[in-house]
Image 1 (tube, rainbow, N blue to C red):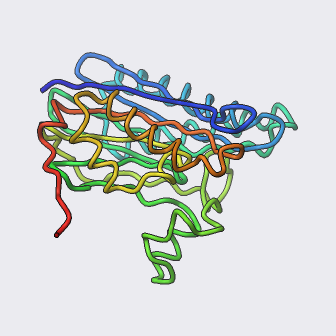
Image 2 (cartoon, one colour):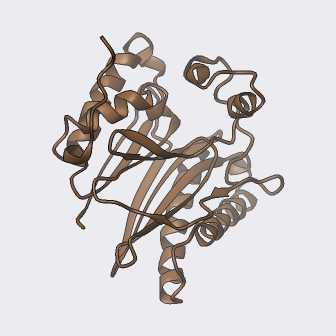
Length: 264
């Protein structure tokens, strides 16, 4: 079972890129992490970098201890990232308000199992044969409104208060981190996508799936989605958010994707 990866991170219309990403491999273990920072005085880029660097370091420590990449263990890794950001806040007053969302995916190729954990509205998807089989739920105002049946999921991307979050790394109290609870067997043709809100806000899930069927590689998949993102963001490109995404394919997802054509 071949694992292929690709990534993209661009500044958009902002003055700096506050997103960060990284990959980690050790023997049969693989992980990908994406983070989206926020905060004044340049703190966002620092927070997201701390989050990614801490996750990568903790993954090495976990692997050396022989600990499996389960959802609960990845949650603990993000807790360590939270502690690292808080520590940096305490050493620099100008960074006191910096925060970061994050998502981490772990795969054990030897067992064929995947797990993940996330905080905020940076998302993880898994697409399988033309369907969305995994989509993390944002820690956000709009997600709470969806859960309370006050907002339709299709209206999330256009809701004016979409960016209000209930949780982010760098928080001493009321921190929420979600993680997969059951072993997730990967399958040949699975396509995982980790992405910040600046990426998914311009791309609905149907478009993400349709692009898989037209892409021979994960890099080509990202290229197709970025082209659509840029076109969709064009009317407001001067204020376009940073966008970052990491694609992880198990085998050839393009050949495994069954495009669902609309009814005539």
